[in-house]
Every structure is written in structure tokens, then in C-alpha cells.
Image (tube, rainbow, N blue to C red; front, side):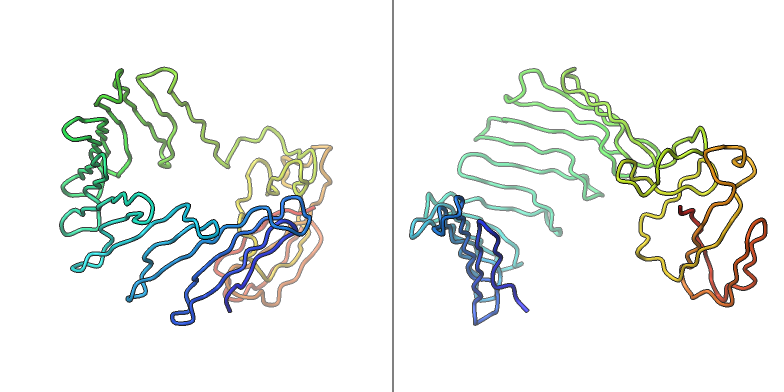
Length: 297
């Protein structure tokens, strides 16, 4: 089933499909901003495809006036895009060259400038990117990447950079960027990464963990967050009464008994029973390989 239109109180967007290939042909965008029944803005996005059913470009039309355009040309030898142009506007052409034996773009040549990408010899990792107008190097970016593919530094050259800024990046043990030091002080970035496991000073939770104010997951015991971010994948649950851990029982903000939920991951629970504290009786769980217990209120 194909979508024929999207509508709301101020806009209408009907779609038309090409009966020959069933692909989306035109999309009309119309807005009635003052809601008087007459459209204040209308544009048509007209797509086209070649004889091999490849996307060959689009026209953005205001009536019969072409406001924007892109035309895609494919190589006859390898089938990859080698040129993007707008022939019915100003006919600017951008030609693509690829690194031999790969899909990596090596050069992009436009009407004014040329961009050249150089990659590491044994990895698909960008080493340098250079932008030139004739023989004049406008900008050059030279990157260093560590053994696991993390970019660690970047240096610049060219007429675009009178002060030649450079950067250093740092990572934590999880591979997250923790700092971006620039040779230009105003461009420095210190990043603070917050992890899920934060130390807890007490067992108290001021409000329900399901309240919109806190938006936090319930805790099992003291100070151990429960990482059930995909509860929709869990099933076959039952409620069980469990005693509060001994080191939390003296906390007057807690009831002596809380209710927990047990989710089985793979198979239904078999012959499970419950009991009041202090005993928990679950004689058999069938072929369950893992169970997750969290507290609910």
C-alpha cells in the first residue's frame, strides 16, 4: 500500500506515482497559512528515473518556473554516479572520481574548485582533504587516526586559515569523545560524559521512579541502577514480595517490604509460586536462562 497524501490543518501533500514503475513521481507541497481555504504556498517536487529505474534527478517547480534542480549521470562502466548538474538553470557540473578498486570518492571537480581526498594505504580512513582553486590551496586538513580508528588530531593549512588552527581529541575507555583541544582557545571544547552507574548516597528515592519529574529507572537494593531500557522485549512477568536488603531496613523512608517484578527472557515461567517475606519460593523456572528482577512501587 502506497501513501497517497499527508494532510493537516494548514498543509496538504498529495503524492502521484509513475504507473510504469510504481515509483514516486511527483509530490505537491501546499500550505494554507491563514486557514482561509486558499493555499498561500505551493511547490511541486518532480522526480525522474532513467531506463534502469535509477534516480536520475528532480525538479522543484513553482508553477512552470524551475527553482531548483539536480540531474544525476551514471558511469557506463561501473554504474556509479560520476556527475551531478543542473542543466536547466546554470548548468554547473560536479564530477566525481573514485579511488581505484573502491567506492571511496577521491576527487570532486566543480566549476571553480577541486576537492581531493587522500586515504590511508591500508585502511578506508581519510588522511587529508584538500580544496584548491587552480593551483591555489584554499584549505587542507591533515588528520591523525589511532590504531582503532579514532581521530586524534587535525592540522590545517591554506589561505583560508591565516592562523592555521589545529585540534587534539581525547577519548575515554568506552570510545566516547571527552575533549577537543584547539590551538585557538575560543574553540576549545571540554566534554562531560555521564555514565549510567552513578554512586548513590542513600536508598531514598524522593518520588516515584515513574514520575515525569525524575524519569529514572527503579533500583534493586541500594545504589545499583537497573538498566532495563528495552522493557518491551521482556515478557511473562509476575509480582513477588521481597524483603528490603538489611542495610536499607533502617531507612524510615522505606516500607519494610517492597514489591519486585521478575521478567523471564526466553521461556515462560513454570510452576512458580510466591510467598510473603522473609522467604521467596520459586521451585522451578523451566528452561529459563536468565531472569531480571526490578522493584516497582
